[in-house]
Image (tube, rainbow, N blue to C red; front, side, top):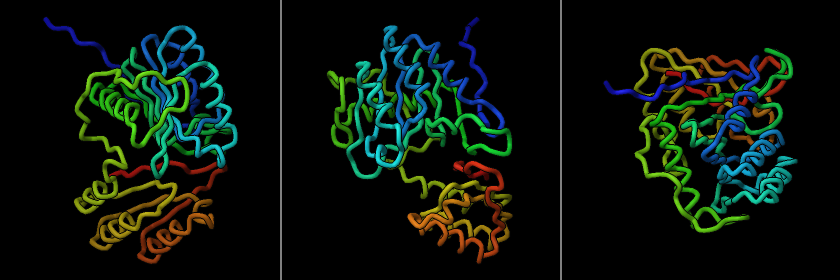
Length: 282
């Protein structure tokens, strides 16, 4: 008989009513082999504190950061400084665009957490169930194909000398994991064009297209969704109020208005907090 390691159920945590931070902190506290972290910004010191504790206990840690977030997200600089002063290796993105990852990988538990939620105090925990929360997708999985894909992509970024540079405490740039194939269900921009892939799915849909989108700035999505609506596919879209009113992102109201004018049913957030989800359901 052949025995296979048991897998825990995948978790899609809903911070409208669930404390998703507890699960993530537990994963950090239980890790014995290695932790890899990549984020756009971090403001909740609980994560930094627990990661530093594991590093001090001898668990290897690597962190990918983007200090360009400091100007817009107070406290991110303090989290980076905390990792740096603890001696944790940090590399920073230097290429155009931003490092928009929100992920933690736990090598000993063969588990990865990723999704739309930044590591802020309000993204993982509701202020009040169902009435004051940040709508997010927080996904935790030990699916080997997904975990191994993130291992390879993290190693790719860690050893990349074109788009990343050393920030602090970095020795030789070496890969930690074997190089695995990337699961075809995943998409890693900017190396892969998410819009091109998504539009192919929109164009093939015949039954129902539902989406929750924080911000819409690429008209390719809008065009394809309008086309789906025009050919009779039922479409429903939930958007974020504040993005529609934000003068810094005028492409969002332009795209939303086009969807409205085309007759696509639209709703927006009715609860306090924010709709930060990015979800398409086909």
